[in-house]
Image (tube, rainbow, N blue to C red; front, side, top):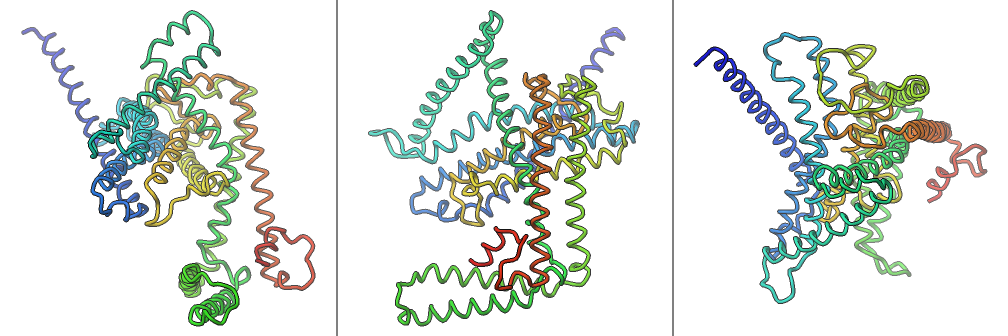
Length: 489
């Protein structure tokens, strides 16, 4: 055998080992995410649906839960995709010849982007509809009862639904892009249908992020204020404990003497109210025992960090709007090859990359807070050990739509210069200047409006409550109307 043949064999062997190594790393990463998501979902599921007398229903719910776990793991992977790529690029720049990080290369990152795109399509188009129809199915009339009968019914419904959706996509694409090349591509299922359908879903997720993120950025201040201990000037824990104990004693007295009331009493509602008051009193006791550092330093620092992160996000988007008007390179675009470790995607180097990662996570958390705070999706909010299976499926679908749109959302707003990899950069609307420019402008405007309105109203309410003006018999000018309403209730 000649030397050239040995070189070819060595190159093929090296490529084989690299592919095996990438498969092992991807499998370990996904297995870790799957285990974490399974633990998370088991704390929200309703135990009665998995311990029923009917073993068939319990089996169906267990299968649906595993499909939801897979979908939630894909959603978590989509959230970590862009931050992991940015950090990997900075690590390769800092340690280009380190032996222990040779596994971290562009081929691995590109493969992870493709896997997330593939699994997102699989979960949204096949797995989650299958899980929902599987839990609602009962089998065809006249067929044998069992899990297999439910599978047959679910598969038939999915085939009919797929034909309906594909027909709608075919008609929509033919109307929008009516030319010969487009009509020929309509018959290509894998190269046209699925990317086009996922592009529509991703665009829907980006629009949902546009609405939920500004609302969540405004809600983060009130949510953080409930979790942390406020300074003595802003909160009177002794008075809250006294009021909670007084209300609990009054409800307990009504439960012990139900015949002394003229009106009928809902005993179950009273017991729930007593349990809620007891839980609130325990939390207030813990907050009263907090140290002076937590009380006087933690709350102001947390509020300051939220204000800085929100202001920095708006500032970056405003700068990106100006760049869109000047430089065409500011438009979001896709990158075919993952050329990592060559140049930093931040003008501030590693420090700027860390800021980008923090902002991406912060906006994702804010979007989830805003999603569950909106009136349309508030009823979808999961409850601890009391979430039905269909509600878990709905939550997993919504979280996957939000998380899979996060890379496109971050790149469209200019939060990072890292170009989209794989099929994420093939969306046609990313090249439309008017859509991208309008999206950035609306996001900056909504975020600024929500922040100014909510932050100033919260500051006024806290100051008025701290000085005791809310207990005056006369109405106070400038006092927030929503806060007066809650106080009277």
